[in-house]
Length: 108
Length: 180
Image 1 (cartoon, chains in turn purple, blue):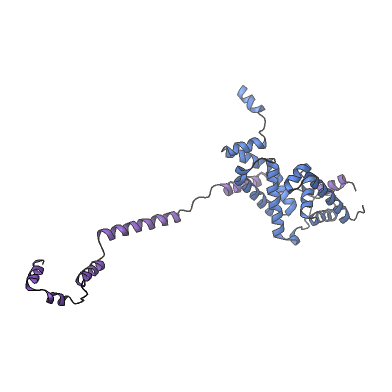
Image 2: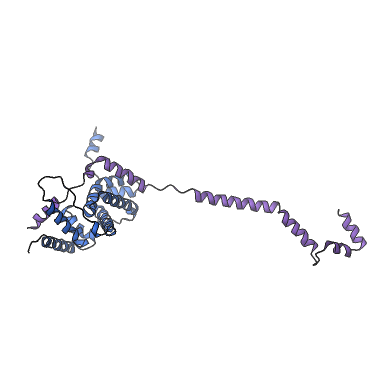
């Protein structure tokens, strides 16, 4: 068998698939290809989540700056009272002389 | 009228021109390249994989890959050769993944006067060839590509492609029971 005969046999052994001659097949092929190479729509939720987190952080920061939480204010008062290490406010008052007591009373 | 005539006699743009136009931003140029080569790529993949579904998938992926890489295509080979290399590699990858056993089913052929068994034997013999030899035979026999192009596609020299083809035919003859 010559090369040409063998090649002819090989060619004859293959029949192209019928789909290759069907225009609908190629329309669907082109549509699928378009979808595959079209830029994918961006996922929006990560961006929205990031924006939400930043906004929440900003709101929290503004709130803390303008209106300290009540618990913090109480802690600050306690710190003032405890400035010299005493935990009992009555003891502090007891250590004041009369003039200092008047001065304190005048504050209220 | 002259403009219409000019359009009618306007030569069909070459692949290189279409590639340049696509790279300049004309998406329709890529569509034209697809239309030109889709059938050949599909049939090549089908001959290797013997499954329309797999062949279609390979052809799709070949064009998607070409679309994404065309900006980096340096034009050292022709667009056709470059595309064929992508398609052939994808088809061979798919074949490897699928495994050798699932390669060939005896597909009933309705064409009259066929020696189905002999043809099946021949196809089977072709499939048993080493990958590169098989690809060379496919490209030479069915696509009638030059050995230079075949060498570029399979990643060898022109002479090596010729040798692969020669060895492949010799092996096919042996499988078919012929003595050299």
